[in-house]
Amino acid sequence: MSTDDTPTPALNLWHHARVATMTPDRPWGWIDIGALVTEGPTLRWVGPEDQLPPELRAQVTTTHDLSNAVVTPGLIDGHTHLVYGGQRAHEFELRLQGATYEEIARAGGGIRSTVAATRGASEATLHTLALHRARTLLADGVTTIEIKSGYGLSLEDEARCLRVARQIGRELPITVRTTSLAAHALPPEFEGRADTYIDAVCTWLPQWHAQGLVDAVDAFCERMAFTPAQVQRVFEAARALALPVKLHAEQLSDSGGAALAASYGALSCDHLEYLSVDGIQAMARAGTVAMLLPGAFYYLRETRRPPIESLRAAGVPMAIATDHNPGSSPALSLTLMLNMACTLFQLTPEEALAGATRHAATALDLQDTHGTLEPGKRADFVVWDVGHPRELAYRFGHSPVLRVVAGGQEVSR
Ligand code: DI6
Ligand code: FE
Image 1 (cartoon, rainbow, N blue to C red):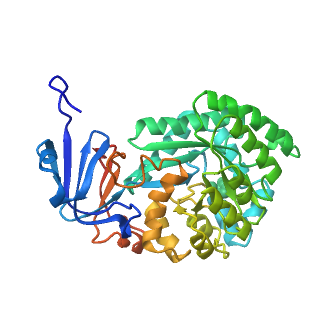
Image 2: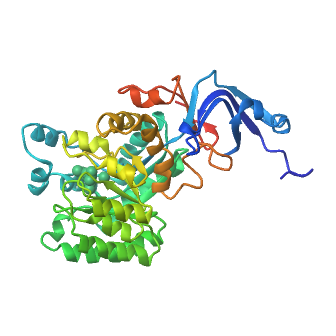
Image 3: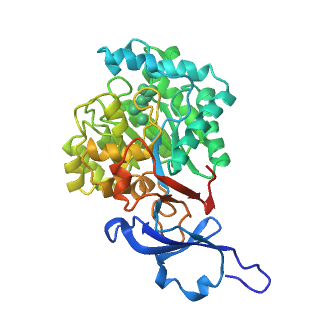
């Protein structure tokens, strides 16, 4: 509301667009000849251009002609491990020669080798590396990123990674949600003492939380990582801090992790190749999002697909993310994941885009402010050089991004 002594806010009109708002009321939330009005970082109005109220148009200070290009919400990468040192190309070669991901991990490679490289890197180096990765995602249309810790595995090393994640959210015009994944792997100094390590994580969590570093808590529930009983103790510590939980569940085997996470009202369960019927039903009851990670499935040359048809039938929302990490998914393109979600998991192009926008927002508890183009939400959107949004999933290996607008500001590229 403006009065005589408050300045009229600057309004930007973005028009002559084909808009996929991704609201669920109609396919793609489609508007054929659409316009958006932004006010600072917020969407003020979205709709068919011929319905734009004249009094609103009269307040517009800057007009952007989008020349019939397609506009979608800014993409949301709801599962990344963006902060780490080193790389694991040698393990890629070993796997091509027949070694499995689990065998390499048991021999001291895998997550542990990245933990060593991360501990050995300075915070400045970790920051430089992660910032470059975040910029690469942003250039591909990603305006919200979830960033997990999980390669520090000590009080101070995990805090460094979470600080780097927070810093990226301040430096780039993107929304960053941080997740503590201290229960990712057993660090070498706790060899043979997994329960003692979980005790330590439960005492560290309140300290990271007190430093404002944690938005959610995750764990790796797998025979090569932590048992459901250990994960449950981490979830209890999260609950005591009123932090939401999520879980790496049923990636390589069925350990019942998804049902456990759903019983804690998990925001998402992630991977899910071995998800059982019980797990699906528990997720449906809890409103937990299925976070599908086709990059890891592809890269580990998995053959068992997540139970897409059953998830769809049960009404479990399906999100798509890169799972960017140095071991099982060194991918930095969410548009590539849209394609893989269709080719590998048989999602429809519309389901895939909803998975990288609306449902990803829900998985990050950002559904009130992100994920669709609606008045009052954050003005995060992408202008694409395509004729229809299905083309975003149809292509791969090159990105048709024309312009990225984050918080109402055009991102320079
Ligand atoms: N599942 C994953 O996909 C990543 N972590 C996890 O629990 C992979 C981590 C790595 O291999 O470095
Ligand atoms: Fe992951």
